[in-house]
Length: 548
Image 1 (cartoon, rainbow, N blue to C red):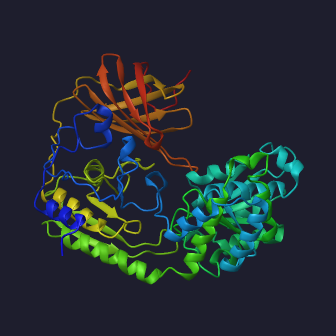
Image 2 (cartoon, rainbow, N blue to C red; image 1 turned 180 degrees about the horizontal axis):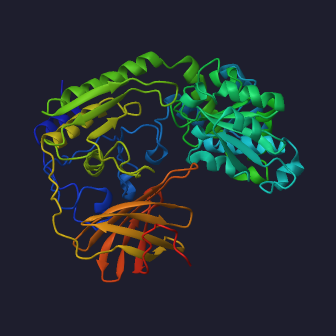
Image 3 (cartoon, one colour; image 1 turned 180 degrees about the vertical axis):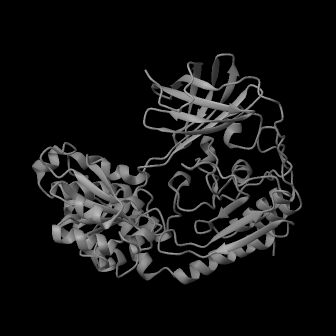
């Protein structure tokens, strides 16, 4: 029989079809996180695209589609929606319905499917956390609801164990509460009081075991009538629900992860009175939660996803398929000397998918993980793994390791991934090492003006230099953090990172030193880019914060 388009494409890749340079010459900003512009495309990808019957709707507007080997990450589109979910959403769009009546009917069905007292569809897991917090503060009282997020006279604290602090804390803080961090049973007991609206727990190892497990937290919160909410956004929807069994009052899930429902939908299940109050505190009702709108299409699509999870999906077969894809990739990439691969089976309920850990000898293949991620991202077809494409809110990977996640792939895409990674490993691009000595000594204090897409801020750098290595402190608007970087010739690179209190701030400054000034671009991680210009001031070798 004639070969399919995909088979021909894979054959072309193996034959070494036309290649191009993956990274064109760019500014110093790109060089900070990506491969240097000197790297040529010896391992670049062939000009090949996945088949699209009607053409890509994204390419029609000049946007590149991608193969998602990264997982259910929002920035790359999250989940691959189930066919039955699409059908339910399309059918729901044909008729109108009163949304309170709709949610009441859906809630009863969700209770049957999940074993919880009640359930509602929200506009995502983050929204579920926000409206759950509002429910714990205002209940179903319209007067209190109208006051939010002004919490004068209302309960205004949410307690969180330290292991639960993440960037998603903002979902609770949006309701106006102050977060109280605890790290022991004694601290939790002391923190629980008349101002406590709820305790919020992140599902994971910390919630399952240890001195502040969910069971321990619930045993202390329940006698004080303090509700407990579990953020289980990426968890599998197990029945009976393990979090509710361990004492949680409410649990939040994402629709755009393993449930393969609408990306802009989520679930809140649990105690009937609180879940109903959360619905009252969200759209279509007016007030604080009006912006957390979920349409009739997403509501029915989410219900279809939960129904499919319980009744029609073969989870064991899905995992076998994902594992077989990883085995194919592993077999192909390990043909390259110095490359090893290991399939890692998941632990726990969150992001429960196997993954492939590919590692290589950097003496043979002089690339780090971020280099390979970026080569895959810039190639054709574009492949997303790790932090490529969104610059995860963590520092770049300097280890010779990448990880491939299969559970949002389509059949056949694993072959493209295997060929692309093999090509990179078999013929790695070479980095030109910087050997030019520093053209200046930048030790000292610098006043820095940062110009964002909207607005400006004054930061301060306190730097110490030893040859081409730089260390110091970055004093920014929110918090200070350590600096590390280099100076080769006049080209400066500085990185700072702050990842405490549920905050993820990673800045990469690149630019040029010119006498008493420095200037360039700064990569703000997931927040885009900005321009910076620095003027030398005094120097504080003690590392003390600068004075005004």
